[in-house]
Image (cartoon, rainbow, N blue to C red):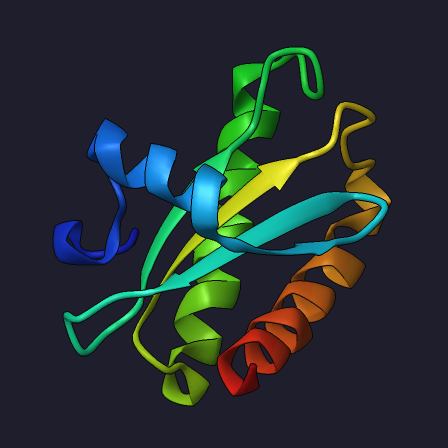
Amino acid sequence: MGLAKDRRLREPLLFKRLFKRGFLLKTKIYGIRALPNDLGYGRLAVLVSKKSLKRAVDRHCLKRLCQEAFRHSSAFFSPQDYLISLNKQGVKPRERRFLFHRLKEDFKSLAKA
C-alpha cells in the first residue's frame, strides 16, 4: 500500500518552491525540506538517485520505507510539504530499521518547528 495521490508531491513547481524556500534538516544519510501549505494535510516526495542506489528494487524499497515513516508520523504534522532526498552514499540494508525510526523522529521535530 502506498500513499494516497493527494498526499504525494508531483508538480515540478512545488519541487522548485521547496528547494528555494523550504526549511532544511540535514543528516548524514538524507535531507528533509519542509514548507507549510494551505491544504490542511501534509504531502511527501522522496528523491533517490541511481548514484546512491544502483538497483531499482533498493530505490523502491527505500521510497516505501520513507512513505511508511511519513504515514506513521502524520498525526503529529502541521500541514506542510516534505521532500526527502537521499545523500549519494546510499543506505545499507542493515541501516534501514534505524533509518525508519530516525525519519519518524525527524518528522515529529519538523512538525513542531
